[in-house]
Amino acid sequence: MAQAIKQVKPGDRVKINFNGMLKDGTLFDTTYEKDECVDDDCGCDDGCDGDNCGCGSEGGPMELEVGAEEFFPQIEEALIGMSPGDKKTLTILAADAFGAYNVEMISTVPRSQFPVGITPMIGDDLELVNDDDESMIVTVIELDDVEVTLDANHPLAGENLTFEVELVEVL
Image (cartoon, rainbow, N blue to C red; front, side, top):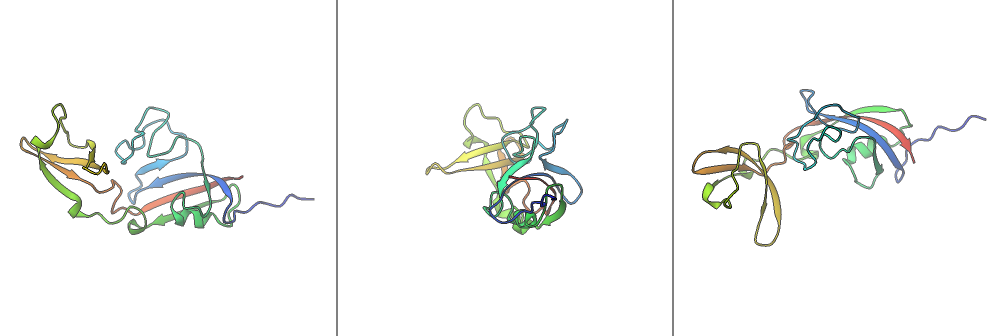
């Protein structure tokens, strides 16, 4: 008797591989093995060290529970009904991903407000902490001898994201 092909249903734990790309085809994240850095400026801390490149991925399939909102809900929903080996491509609109790019999240501060020994450079990601111990990551986008311009938008804000998703396994 033939073994039934297992299809994903809500609540299943699964393993998936994916490529995350921008509209122009730029790869910003992947779970597939890679030989070079995907994007060291994608807004996450893991950076690139040869084997571990890209935003949040450690190489190898991602494991998640379908419907538990551990990843983009649109991707989790698209997994329902898939069987191992199935592939889908879907686009997540900016509003449903990291939101619209907001110019109000750009601010200019005097260089004198930076601690001694901190020399900001364009492209640097800095963590700002307020008096309530709340932090936010900002990116240096402009600077001169007097001021530094900081952007608090997520690096993928305003971008529609395309994901090529492959179901590897239903656990």
